[in-house]
Length: 242
Image (cartoon, rainbow, N blue to C red; front, side):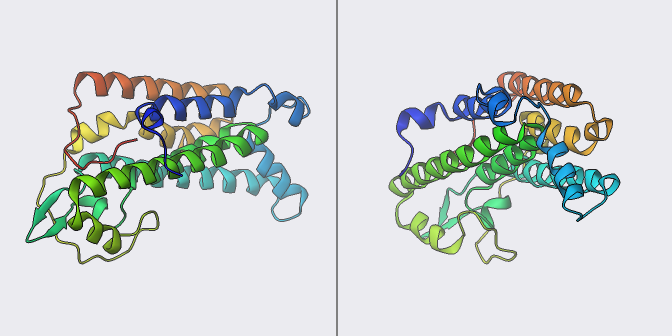
């Protein structure tokens, strides 16, 4: 079931609410038995208790897993923001640039990875809510957006849907390039939030300071909002945004 028009317009605030509930939902204290440990700490402890890894090794492994998720999300978000989405039609074929030649929804996929990375800082029960909730909502947004593009772009977009996977990128593609030029400075500025999540998981996690990590994400998100308001232009027709 695709998202409604209202949900689509409010997609940003809704995703923020999902993340906030993942950190501070009222049920967390009860389900986590009053312990405000992060998923990162919990996973390291469980790996150690299960005898899979000594705790001294389990913590770095979990940190690296979170950093990897954040890195994938950051690359997809920045790369997707730098390139306009599919929209150029030539000889009846839809053309695209950047990640849109390999996967139809790089920004939404990047958003999922960013939320998965942030979930490492949530309490376990909060992460158990936030990741599935975000997954369902993002899928509904994708269905709504693809339906809208199919109406606007017609047969060429239908062929694009058949040529490019929705969420699992292809390593190679024969889709023609549109010939646009990536706007890297604007993309990086607009995705300061994604960059901050990566820095938090890759750098600040080693401090084991939970409050510092949350502050890093909040500061980055605020900086991203300011940058978008001041310097980022509206995306080109056909661009996917989340």
